[in-house]
Image (cartoon, rainbow, N blue to C red; front, side, top):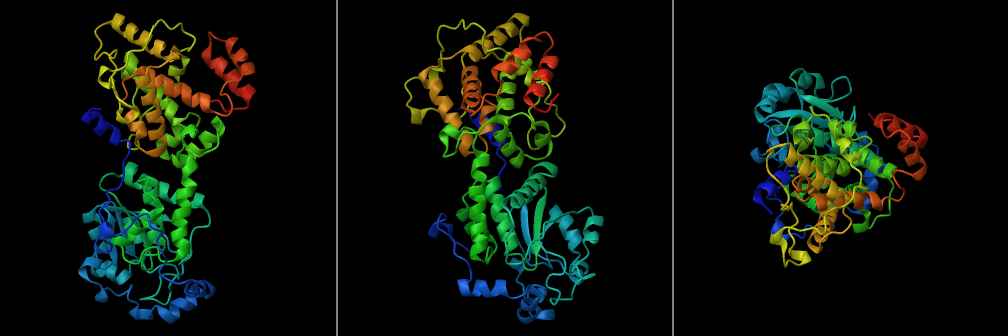
Length: 476
């Protein structure tokens, strides 16, 4: 596996850099240990039974509320001067709600611009904690959101009850997708997403923990411990800890690409596309509405190996000016082409390796040719790809690589990144057929195939006939 390929593959897997804070010693903490809540069951029950307004007026301190008065904060508790704030990752700052007088006194908006902060995710509901600090503007918030928006700072409002959790995991998924978009697509790498509530440890910690589970694929327990190491007291209640754990379980079926390597029931194409829709966003969600991402990536890579790469561009989370219309043309290659290859020769560097020793990254196939030296050579490469698609028997080493890829695609977000760098068309083709063969229902039933065969000279009409007969939307 080449180092250069490693670097390219990791681009598919953009994650947050996790540098543990001083509040928890990672070397002395079992990150997989179930985190406990900050309160006992009786205390949590009392908090839920009393109205939040009454709790605030009795316990928050009114104008002397410690989270609305910066005089009590230490310097290391003010990543932004005038806000109780901590960097959780290099792109995420957790902060308490701004107070108008501090926004002016410490010129907080200018601080945001100097730090590259361009978005705020607000988790507070209008009217919360009206007794704290200097009160609320128009009975809504302790600051004017419009002041920040006028300065070009984006706002995303996802309010839910204090000390509570979201009503559904689907709602949480929507929130973390917005965070992922803000961090990876819209303004990467200079954007920091901000989460804000009253003192920003309960709901804020839950959202950041769920985001790390989604983006970095860490366990829920590790995410909670990590957030607490950077932001003391985060994820306070047992239900909030459970919310992060439930979100991790909720995501598992969304991440399954090959159910044969996961504790997951078989799925059909419609079910897979529905799950894919749940985790993709932006450009990819629009362009891959009817096409599994793994199929697109494999077909595009095969086209590249067939010297068609000048027609294509692979979309990534940061690539938004791209077209996918050429990709389905790869599917026109028929598997019924006669295989003239008497045997598949694998990379000599893999000879003698056991399953555990086979590299889990892309391999260099001996048939791949760099550069285009003439039309004959291009046709040779196209013929080579056709042979790979028609091939039904792999060498032991290639079979091991296929299995390795299938497990990696289930377990790591950057699995597709390695697949984009794979140079062995036999491995790519087998992954393509394996994915299609694992589906619970065939993509193309016999009766629909007959309709298409009647229009082999007009692929668009054939596709239209098939989609209408199958009750599917036509994707052109």
